[in-house]
Image 1 (cartoon, helix red, strand yellow):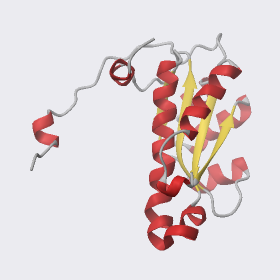
Image 2 (spheres, one colour):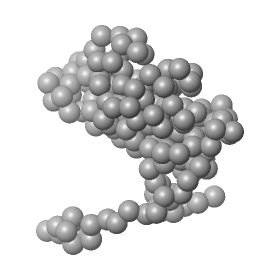
Image 3 (spheres, one colour):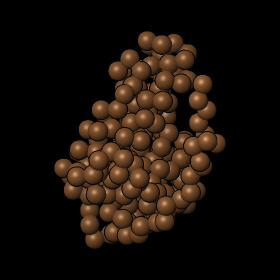
Length: 173
């Protein structure tokens, strides 16, 4: 089993998935458990996750995401939705406008890392029509889709992308 540092280093955005290998239910369950283990403000978990496995729905998600049709090729698309009202009940406006977004995106990032640990690939999709996705998934009022995370067995292994040097990103005081 890889250690955490190797897991992070092996996370790449995968946009080509093997169509002959579905994601096993136990792996999907483990990934969802890890997403829900992510830290959240006040342990409120101000998010909901919709696991989309039906091909027609994934195709519609791809269309709602500026025709990013690789979404339909991935056997699973996890839609991470913030629940601002859940955070607002405890933290007011800052909970609604920030903490719910943070909770949701941290959970999505944990899902991506868990997918690598499970031998899968993923990619984060943030460019989509929020209203179309909400209608397609019949989300209840107040939920806001923030990220689509595609999951599956990679049919490609992209080159690592360059990162800024730490000296450009980090300032010690």
